[in-house]
Amino acid sequence: MPRTLPRVPVCPSGAGLYLAAWALGTAAVLTALADAPASAQRKTPPSSREAMFYSFAPVVKTAAPAVVNVYVSSRVKTFVSPFADDPVFGRLFAERFGMPQERMQNSLGSGVIVSADGVVVTNNHVIKGGGMTEIRIVLADKREFDAKVVLRDEKTDIAVLRITSGDGRFPFIELADSDSLEVGDMVLAIGNPFGVGQTVTQGIISALARSEVGQSEAQVFIQTDAAINPGNSGGALVDVSGRLAGINTSIYSRTGASHGIGFAIPSNLVRLYVDSALKGGKVERPWLGAKIEVITRDMAQALGLDRAAGALVARVSDKGPAAEAGMQAGDVIVAVDGFEVPDARSALYRLTTRGVGNRAKLDIVRKGRKLTVTVALAPAPKPGPNDLRDLSGAHPLDGLQVAAIVPSVADEFNLEEQDGVAIVKVQERSAAARVGFLPGDILVQVGRHRIITLADVDRAVKERQRQWQIAVKRGGRLLQVQVPGG
Image 1 (spheres, rainbow, N blue to C red):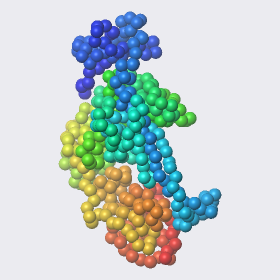
Image 2 (cartoon, one colour):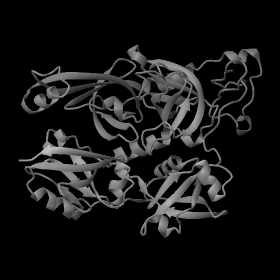
Image 3 (cartoon, rainbow, N blue to C red):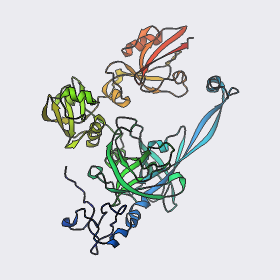
Image 4 (spheres, rainbow, N blue to C red):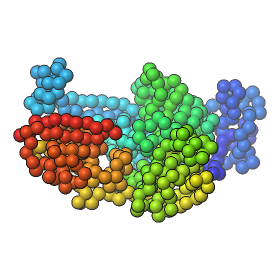
């Protein structure tokens, strides 16, 4: 794909130049003015020794005012128990009979203002807290403002906030096109590590489309060696034009300190969430209507591929975008809209950033032949009124909302199953919460009833049991619990 943004580097000459540098004495150039002639937009080494000593200061002056501190205070309820030191009875007694006490839980992270009216992007884990949450945004010039959560997503670890006080005129950073980045490009990380105050570190892009380090299939990262430490979460990864290339989110470390392996959420995924937040809705991920998997070396050999790369189409739903496009089980997706995809997560990332309502071209390999298909990106079908149940009564499932595993439920909780009943909500301090059920659990058995449909759940909870035998599937494991009946 051609690069759509002006690329950096020219030799330091002419009045228009604002930045050039030489990294580690042997690496390549940095950047020049956006209005430099196209003929000059080639990466060339500096022309003189003096060229090695240009500064990043103009980039920092552009970006740093929009990088903020995010202070979160949450009121958390705790329950005092006379058995507080006992690991089993302490928790049970506190939940059922303990006296509630409130305490404040404080956290600090970084964030980035991305619009003049005060839209702030940070990590979801920065603002994650129980109970009533108060959020304060502190700018680099020490001004403070209240903020509220507009949109948050645990899967991608993105949260979008809006400043609710002030005059509505804030410094902000423009979003870059993260697809235009290349390994070796120089970047700056700006945030508040360890709470010491706004700090700028410099490095390069070490890798793109890192998918092996995320917690969910929705996560793909930019890797950088710019120093990122605790407190940098939610801060800016900035390119040498002062645009937002990504949101710093995590590091690989055995000690908690930076070892030169940091990860940032790409700006194109950030843009999708900001646009959705401004439109007042939640992010809808495209539904392919197919199950795709990582290709192992053995699978690649069996499929006649020259390398273990791409996304294997393991299953195609009877009705869905993949089936309508003519895709078949056994197809291997090797590129989406011209971008190579090394694995299944990368393919899903490309489809997600393309967006619902658009179409994507998929290059596939089928029995050794290369084909191109066009897929309509539609949202997954949502559960209807008959696909949901709110459970209440004198039984251990009291406080659960359960649903048939329709495509949107399977997508939200990353479930392999196409049939069954899944737990989608657990009411706080309910009987079900005390048992330990979690959203995403699949009900397998309740009492003597095997659970396949919602009607099976209805029958099971109507019966009285001296001892409830309940089985759920969680993350591929079967868990069983016995709960005394009434």
